[in-house]
Image 1 (tube, rainbow, N blue to C red):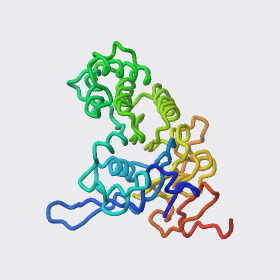
Image 2: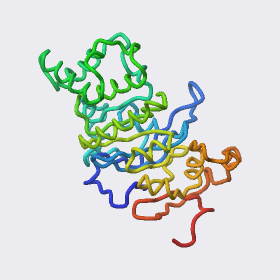
Image 3: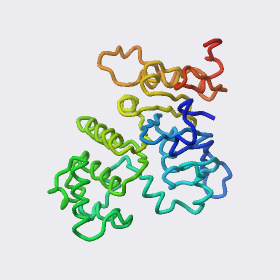
Image 4: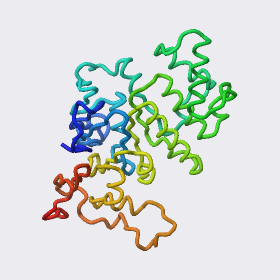
Length: 313
């Protein structure tokens, strides 16, 4: 079982994923073929911690988020929420309590917001549904407070999503999540569709919110630079499996798995000689090869291809 931390125990983790797998049918009606999107994934998310889940498109990152949001049912494994097996006591889907405590920020803020509703109406609904405020005055005051938290002015309350910039729409999406006082936020590529100039503002906002409110976050991205900036811990995913994990600074400074090294080499750097960037199409035969879990420190592990294992530590 892969762990992101050697000393992360079940009692410390607010959410634990244990040997979770997810497969989908392929080939059309009547076909028995299935493809494994997630394979035997395990990690812990501790209270107040930001875990970065990094990997290329199709690696299974968003499937993990959808499973934790209870939008998908895993094919195998356990999800422990505060030590309780979620899949056993909520077999038919997430309860209202779980949906309030575990919220999701989607990649496309425009698609996730109702285009026919004004910002005030968008923020009203979660407050009313989850009974976080009652009465028109209290609801309005709570909305103003949330808007201020995410850095939006009161005059935007009467705007429709299409009248806002991409960064403003994502701030509204974050405000909607904060309206119900979540304990965990699943952020699926929250900055990938935004202009580069506004991404840092959203990352700073996310970090500030998690720190001030002790919110745990699973931050999903293909961008190692943003994971290093925001995440306490980073885990790397390839072909549905976790292949490396550890404290973000240590992992980025001293990556051990060949795939992690190639991801870091692909991070844009104007000072880099492009001739030195590895060619993924000529990757060696470690992809899909047998692996063995190896620890490099108390907070850094990698599922190393057998051909690259060190003979000594």
